[in-house]
Amino acid sequence: MSDVSELDRKQVTRLNKLQKRLRREVGSAIADYNMIEAGDRVMVCLSGGKDSYTMLDILVNLQQRAPVDFEIVAVNLDQKQPGFPEDILPAYLDSLNVPYHILEKDTYSIVKDKIPEGKTTCSLCSRLRRGTLYGFAHRIGATKIALGHHRDDIIETLFLNMFYGGKMKAMPPKLLSDDGANVVIRPLAYCREKDIEEYATLKDFPIIPCNLCGSQENLKRAEVKALLKSWDKQFPGRIETIFTAMQNTAPSQGVDRNAFDFVSLKQDPNATMSGDVAEADLPAFDFMDVSNSGHIDLDSAAKRIEVVEVFQP
Image (tube, rainbow, N blue to C red; front, side):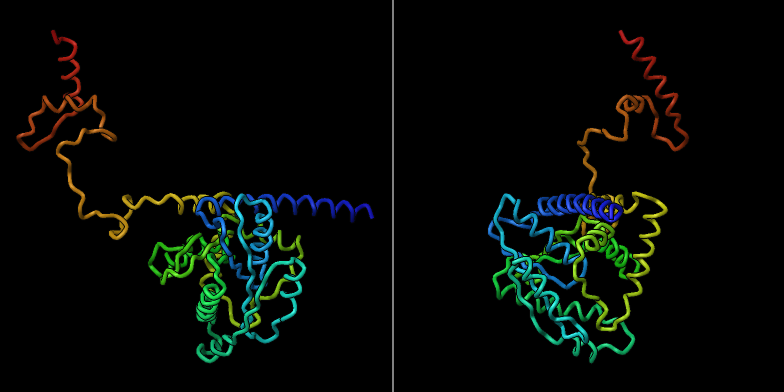
């Protein structure tokens, strides 16, 4: 009995530690990107997976402590996948006393009709789901749509676009839809997937499997995920460095002509030389004969200016 109690105490300690970390990271992301403002109605998209459960849990926790008032409305889209347990999410949300809506739309049949057997259906499924959720957000007056993508998702998307799409593009923590009607936020942008997974296990969320549709996992994303996991194990801190790099881009040091105006770069004839050029070496050029082609000994020129400075009256 004492062993069980000790285990329970350790789990509670670990849970509290994880909650504080996740709360801090979500709070930082919200502040850094101004995700939630006073008076916002945040539509939290709940799929029944570990990420969306964790997002809702942390947002509800932060709502009680936040310096601004905002509403939370949980929304789940029942896409009529075979075997979907319709009672789980309503029971869970009722226990939290969180306002919610369960939308029913048979996108499963549409996807099965359009995608050949054995092919990944995730892309079309997500587009149909996004369209439905965007429309419903507008209907209920939601000012923000919260999705459960975490830091690993963002980094994986970057590498997927680099390897297979030829783009330096990821998932932004905050996004304005193309039509300008919706603002999408990703409060878990700073959170690690392994922390979320452990937190969900300790909280014992009623997880609903994401493969009820029978679709195969996106193999390209699985490859990138495996690559990043191997890096994380072999080179601790590399994933953190990658994410930090994504927050510190320098367009002028890249090759994207759309991100920086290279064409208009011109020399400034009145500029004062600085930076990589040492000013102490500049006067040496006054003693050089550069009218003819040939070798120029910069060291000798520097010595000559030193002599002039010593004997200058």
